[in-house]
Length: 69
Image 1: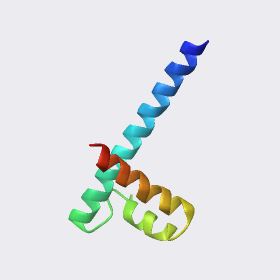
Image 2: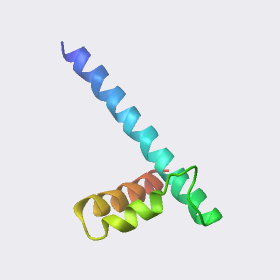
Image 3: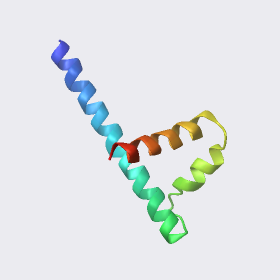
């Protein structure tokens, strides 16, 4: 049973890592192009969150992802 939970944890961590990578790519591409990417506006979403908790989490997550690599 513990192997199942370890496997599930690894899959969840992998999915989160992939999602953060796509978010970082979206932010970088939007900053380079200056417009939304296929109707997706990651920079605008982070700016709209402002000082809300999710905005802080997004900024910290981006920082940690870049620091890790």
